[in-house]
Amino acid sequence: MMTSSPSTVLNHPTHQSPTSLLPYPNSHFRIRPGFCNLMKRGKKNSDAGDRLTNSDTRTGSSELNAMMKPSLSSMKTMGLLLAVLMVASVMFSLSVVLRDPPSDDVIETEAASRVLQSRLHQDGGLSEKKAQLGNINLVPSFDKESCLSRYEASLYRKESPFKQSSYLDYRLQRYEDLHRRCGPFTRSYNLTLDKLKSGDRSDGEVSGCRYVIWLNSNGDLGNRMLSLASAFLYALLTNRFLLVELGVDMADLFCEPFPNTTWFLPPEFPLNSHFNEQSLLRNSGNPMVAYRHVVRDSSDQQKLFFCEDSQVLLEETPWLILKADSFFLPSLFSVSSFKQELQMLFPEKDTAFHFLSQYLFHPTNVVWGLITRYYNAYLAKADQRIGIYIGVSESGNDQFQHLIDQILACGTRHKLLPEVDKQRNLPSSQVLNRKSKAVFISSSSPGYFKSIRDVYWENPTVMGEIISVHKPSYKDYQKTPRNMESKRAWAEIYLLSCSDALVVTGLWSSLVEVAHGLGGLKPWVLNKAENGTAHEPYCVKARSIEPCSQATLFHGCKD
Image (tube, rainbow, N blue to C red; front, side):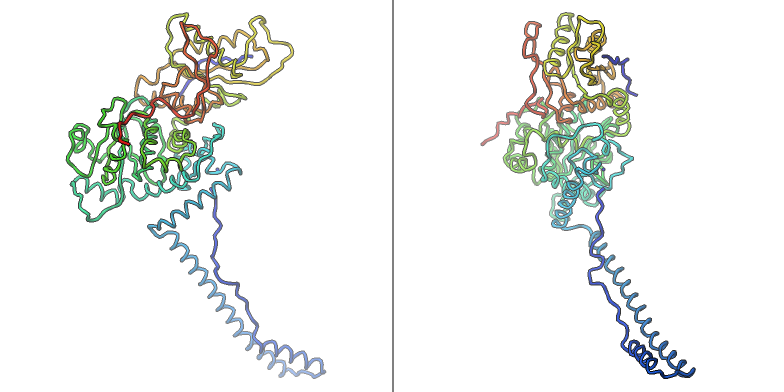
C-alpha cells in the first residue's frame, strides 16, 4: 500500500428501445352481421308486445350460441395469428442483428449510432462515455468489476477542456471491430500465423489481417507508455492490429483496452524461437515479416521508417515487428500519406497523446486501489490540488535552497501557492480566505518535500488559506523494473495527472510528460537558474499539453 509521510495540515449504458416489433397496423375485430341482426330482431319483437314462449326462448338462445361460437373461434384464430407474426418479426430482427460478419455500411451505421447516443447522454449523469474518460465511448461488453478505473476515472479528474473529434470516435470503433475479427486465436489470426511460420506468401486463403508487434523494452515506465501510444497510433493509421509483448509487468499495470479480446502477444508466438532481434537485424529472409528499430540512437537507415517509400513497401507485409523505446508519435505527422488522416483525427495536433493515453491506459484494480486510497485520504477534500514534480536530486545547500525559493516564487507569482507572513506567528484574527489547497510533491529526494512542508507549517498564510503538503514515497521508481515499484510509479503518474495545476523543474522526464499529457495540463516549467540564482520570470507556462521529449526526427527523406 502506498504510504504518505506524515502530512501536515496547516493554516455512466444507453439503452435502445425495441423498434419495429409490429411492422403492420393494429388489427380490428368485426362482429358478424348475423349476430347484430339477431339482436335487432329480438328487440323488435319485444317492442311489438309479442310474448315469447319457452320454446321461442330456447330457440333464440340456441341461435345466439350458434352465432357466437364461430365469432369467438375467429377471434382466437386471429389472436393466435397475431402472436405468430410477432414472434416471426422478433426472430427476423435478431437474425439481422446477430449475423456475422456485418457489412461495412452496417459497421459505419452502428458506429455513428453509438457516437450519437453517447453525446445525447454526455451531460446527463455518469454516462458510460464520460465514465471512462469524458470523451471516449465505452463498449457495453466490458466487465466493470474487472477494471474499475475505466468507469470511475471522471470522479477523480476534471473534464478535459479539449473536445475529441467525432472522426476519432468513429475510427476507434472501427479499430475495435478489427480487434474482434483479427485478435489472437481467431481464425484470421491462426491463418496469418501459419503463413508466417511457413513463409508462404501465396494468394491462397488470405485473412485480410495485418499486425504490428510492439516489443517491450522493459525500460522506465514513462518511456514505455509514450512508445506504446505512438505504436497504437501507427496501427490505427495503417489498419494493423497492435500486439503488445507482455514483458515483466504490463498485465499488472494496465487493463485490457479493447472489449472481448486481448492486445497482448500470446506466449505461443514464435518470437524468440524464429524471429528474435538478432535474426531480424540480419534480415530473416521471410517475406511475411519485417523488423524496424525506432529508438533514440536509431541508425540513418532505420530513420527511413518515416519516409513515404518505406511505408509503401510495408503495405504488403502482414507482420511488422517494431522496437521503440521513446515517443515517436510526432514523426508520424511527417509521413505524407498520413497527414490528411491525422488532421481529421486530431484537429488540434497537440491533443493526440492526450486522447490516446486516456483511451489506452486504465490502471488495473490493484493500482487503482493505490490511487484512490491516497487521493481520498489526502487530496479529495481540498478546493484545489497542486502537483509539483522535482526531477533534480539534492546537491549543495546553496543550490538546494535556490530551487526551493524558485518553486515557491513561481507558485506565489501565479497564484498557485499562497504567500506566507513570516512576521506573524499566529494567523490573523480576521480570516479572509478559507480556501484549502493540497500540494502533491513527486520527487526522489525527500528534502524538497520537507522544506516546502515546513514553510507552511511554521508560517501562517497571508490570506488564511489552509495548506497541506504530501508526498507518497521517498523511493526512486525509475531505477528498478520490479513489479510493486512500477505499480507505485504508475499511481504517482496518475495522481499528478489529477492536479488542477502542475509545476515542474523540467520537461525532460518521461514520468512528468505522461502525467501532464494524460491530464491535459500545460505545466509551469521552472527557468534554468543562472549562477545558481533564479530571477524573474521564475517559470513559464508550457505551450502544449503534448510530451516533447523527442522532437520530430530528421529523416533524410526525399521530398
